Amino acid sequence: MSTSATPAQALGEAFVAALVDGDADAVAASLAPNARLSALLPGGIREELGRTAVAGAFADWFVRYSTARELLESDVDVIAGQLSVRYRMHTSTGGRASVIEQHLYATVDDPGLGDIRLMCTGFHPR
Image (cartoon, rainbow, N blue to C red):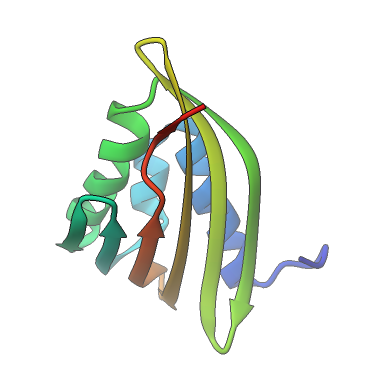
């Protein structure tokens, strides 16, 4: 990514930072009020509608579930008008160390991420 991020890229970077920090309020703040999540997870599909529900899904994965998070790599870009975000993290919960990677594409609706389509590897032991 270039050093001059677009507003959409800055939003994506702030979203990733909020996940890594385990900051549920900042995750919610990065979402549009009418945000919608369609997530393909190892256990099936999860769909949520509305800022609170979508933020709750990410909080389940990265705030309540993980006690420690370390960002290994991430990429944020805009492709054909869609925000593309990818991140890989080491996480830890109760002494169990895992690695997870998620890829998402999202619309950017004023004032945040709108329609989010996500694919997740799940948490794998490292």
